[in-house]
Length: 108
Image (cartoon, rainbow, N blue to C red; front, side):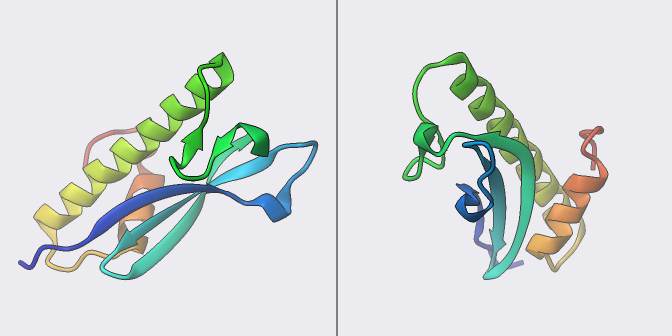
């Protein structure tokens, strides 16, 4: 099977800002297919590092957000690997759906 491109990116949805906080969104890209999702977290835009795609600083809030984002990224990566091992065709939507369904379980 040909090697595929795989990337998980986090960003703020600034146009949906409420009470000084914007929702954190995620985007999975695999071979040009894109699937976006909500991380179900919000952060002050002043605390967001756009280049690093994570919360900036060493505050407790920033550390908690970054820890949750890292967990999401790791779990998505595991599902991507499982689908690659099992199927010949992988899309961002397949990976997102597998991650969403088993958000509580970590198995394939």
